[in-house]
Amino acid sequence: MTYILPPLNALRAFEAAARHLSFKLAAHELHVTPAAVGQQVKALEARLGVRLFERLHKQLVLTEAGQAYLPEISDGFRRIADATAQLKPVGAVLLQLGVHGSFDLRRLDLAEFRATHAEIGLRVLQPAGLHELIEGKVDLLIARGLGNQPGYRCDRVTEGSGLGDWLIAPAGTADCPEISGFRDWLRGLPSENALAPHRRRRLVGIVRS
Image (cartoon, rainbow, N blue to C red; front, side, top):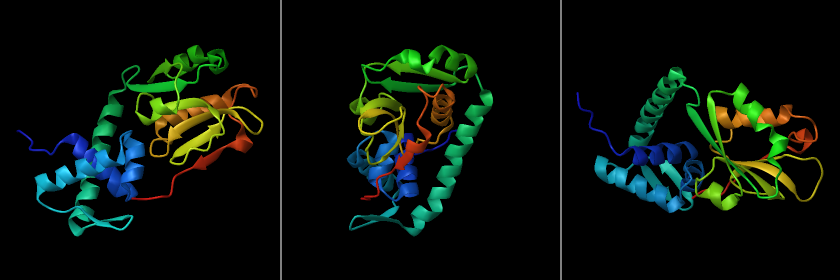
């Protein structure tokens, strides 16, 4: 049987935008620009011949067709993810970690992380910054700064105030299993290396388009 399907990227753009009711937040999740999300959704609507969103002033609203389509598409992606997870080959999930240039990687004990998290294929890009995170070259980032990045979850790696090292991940993927697993790993490291518990905070952009 041959399945007649719309382009996968267009479906992903619609599903993310429909969950967030925001092209901007969908773009953060998918590591693309809001314009790219909008173009993918527009192309999907043209292919289907129906409007999926009403585009109001600074607000997206699902049409009746969009409301009916969303749960089916979300369930389809969930089934694909579950089927993939059940295969469980070693390193099935690739996690790209970016690290700023002056950070000492020995603090992370990455060899031990890889040994105890065989299901995650961890790769490290150093040096890396917010630019690489925005472009999707890395999935999460240890960056030097103040940690104020709207649209991202920022967890302080070191104690103290002012400038410091922060673990930064897009809000849309910050709680996925592999990123949560790495965050939990940092919390379990010796106190001088681990995430500062009283400094942890979630910073999520609230501007919608």
